[in-house]
Length: 173
Image (cartoon, rainbow, N blue to C red; front, side, top):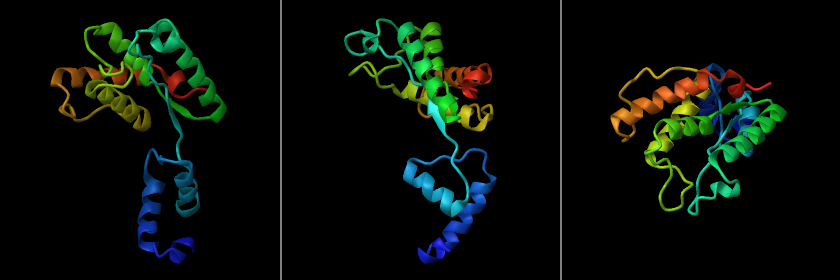
């Protein structure tokens, strides 16, 4: 009825069929989520990013003294929120931490501020989010989004490993 009132019946019917058949349904805002629930009769999947610790420009690690302290505080806070909200977690920060350990010479942070991701680490973030949302391995080995092929391969593999080997983080109880 609302779709008819807004003159979006054809669009709404396609969106409703799509929403009913997809594995993961997300929106960009609470308002859009409410509209989807009402128009498409599907609630959104909520996924929190377990974000990354960063050195920032003066190497104080956000004021927490070290990557390890910062990572642990982020983990504890996001997991508490996820349990309270009953939602999943994309363990991006865990992938960043592993990448820092295995490739300390790779820059994950934009040099201008020491906290925003580079193109390579933004690709890693997207890979972790993809695997978290869909629970699938990457089927296309040449996807690299303008990241060097060897690094892109590593990032895809790392995302799969972090998500699949940490089910209690991805789906906290």
